Length: 99
Image (cartoon, rainbow, N blue to C red; front, side, top):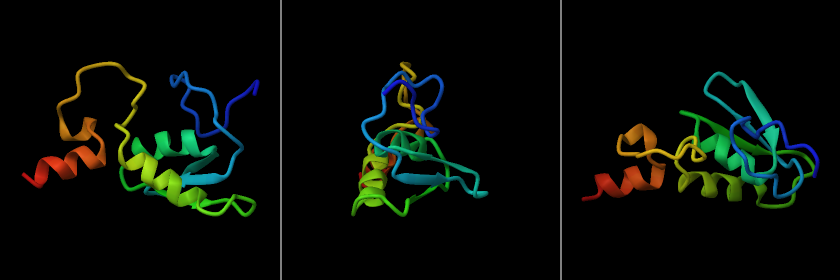
Protein backbone atom coordinates (compact mmCIF):
# COMPACT_ATOMS: atom_id res chain seq x y z
CA UNK A 1 0.00 0.00 0.00
CA UNK A 2 1.67 3.23 -1.16
CA UNK A 3 -0.52 5.57 0.86
CA UNK A 4 -2.15 5.33 4.23
CA UNK A 5 -5.76 5.83 5.20
CA UNK A 6 -7.11 9.23 6.31
CA UNK A 7 -7.24 8.06 9.96
CA UNK A 8 -3.44 7.57 10.09
CA UNK A 9 -1.75 10.36 12.05
CA UNK A 10 1.15 11.94 10.12
CA UNK A 11 3.57 11.11 12.97
CA UNK A 12 2.42 7.48 13.29
CA UNK A 13 4.92 5.40 11.29
CA UNK A 14 2.82 2.23 11.05
CA UNK A 15 1.32 1.02 7.77
CA UNK A 16 -2.35 0.29 7.21
CA UNK A 17 -3.35 -3.29 7.94
CA UNK A 18 -6.26 -3.49 5.55
CA UNK A 19 -8.87 -1.50 3.66
CA UNK A 20 -10.76 1.54 4.94
CA UNK A 21 -13.69 0.02 6.86
CA UNK A 22 -14.51 2.31 9.81
CA UNK A 23 -15.31 5.95 10.49
CA UNK A 24 -14.01 7.47 13.73
CA UNK A 25 -15.73 10.61 15.01
CA UNK A 26 -14.72 12.93 17.83
CA UNK A 27 -17.04 14.61 20.35
CA UNK A 28 -18.11 17.29 17.83
CA UNK A 29 -18.60 14.81 14.94
CA UNK A 30 -15.40 15.64 13.07
CA UNK A 31 -13.72 12.47 11.93
CA UNK A 32 -11.85 10.33 9.49
CA UNK A 33 -12.34 7.01 7.78
CA UNK A 34 -9.66 4.39 8.22
CA UNK A 35 -8.47 0.85 8.42
CA UNK A 36 -9.15 -0.98 11.69
CA UNK A 37 -5.54 -0.44 12.86
CA UNK A 38 -5.43 3.33 12.38
CA UNK A 39 -9.07 3.68 13.39
CA UNK A 40 -8.21 2.12 16.76
CA UNK A 41 -5.13 4.32 17.19
CA UNK A 42 -7.18 7.42 16.38
CA UNK A 43 -10.04 6.39 18.66
CA UNK A 44 -7.60 5.78 21.54
CA UNK A 45 -6.32 9.33 21.12
CA UNK A 46 -9.75 10.98 21.27
CA UNK A 47 -11.80 11.95 24.29
CA UNK A 48 -15.42 11.05 23.65
CA UNK A 49 -14.73 9.42 20.28
CA UNK A 50 -16.97 6.90 18.55
CA UNK A 51 -16.45 4.35 15.79
CA UNK A 52 -18.87 3.19 13.12
CA UNK A 53 -18.52 0.56 10.43
CA UNK A 54 -18.68 1.81 6.85
CA UNK A 55 -21.40 0.23 4.64
CA UNK A 56 -19.07 -2.31 2.99
CA UNK A 57 -17.16 -3.21 6.16
CA UNK A 58 -16.85 -6.84 7.18
CA UNK A 59 -18.98 -7.88 10.15
CA UNK A 60 -17.48 -6.83 13.48
CA UNK A 61 -15.11 -4.16 12.10
CA UNK A 62 -16.35 -1.43 14.45
CA UNK A 63 -16.32 -3.61 17.57
CA UNK A 64 -12.82 -4.93 16.78
CA UNK A 65 -11.65 -1.34 16.37
CA UNK A 66 -13.35 -0.28 19.61
CA UNK A 67 -11.84 -3.19 21.57
CA UNK A 68 -8.36 -2.57 20.16
CA UNK A 69 -8.56 1.13 21.08
CA UNK A 70 -9.36 0.24 24.70
CA UNK A 71 -5.86 -1.14 25.29
CA UNK A 72 -3.95 1.48 23.27
CA UNK A 73 -2.43 4.55 24.85
CA UNK A 74 -3.31 7.91 23.29
CA UNK A 75 -0.77 8.84 20.61
CA UNK A 76 0.87 5.44 21.18
CA UNK A 77 3.61 6.15 18.63
CA UNK A 78 5.14 8.75 20.99
CA UNK A 79 7.93 7.09 22.94
CA UNK A 80 8.10 8.82 26.31
CA UNK A 81 7.32 8.04 29.95
CA UNK A 82 3.59 7.78 30.51
CA UNK A 83 2.22 8.13 34.02
CA UNK A 84 -0.68 10.60 33.87
CA UNK A 85 -4.21 9.20 33.39
CA UNK A 86 -4.57 11.12 30.11
CA UNK A 87 -1.47 9.30 28.81
CA UNK A 88 -2.66 5.79 29.66
CA UNK A 89 -5.08 3.49 27.89
CA UNK A 90 -8.65 3.23 29.04
CA UNK A 91 -7.93 -0.33 30.20
CA UNK A 92 -4.94 0.86 32.27
CA UNK A 93 -7.04 3.58 33.90
CA UNK A 94 -9.82 1.10 34.74
CA UNK A 95 -7.25 -1.24 36.33
CA UNK A 96 -5.83 1.61 38.42
CA UNK A 97 -9.27 2.50 39.75
CA UNK A 98 -10.15 -1.10 40.66
CA UNK A 99 -7.40 -1.22 43.28
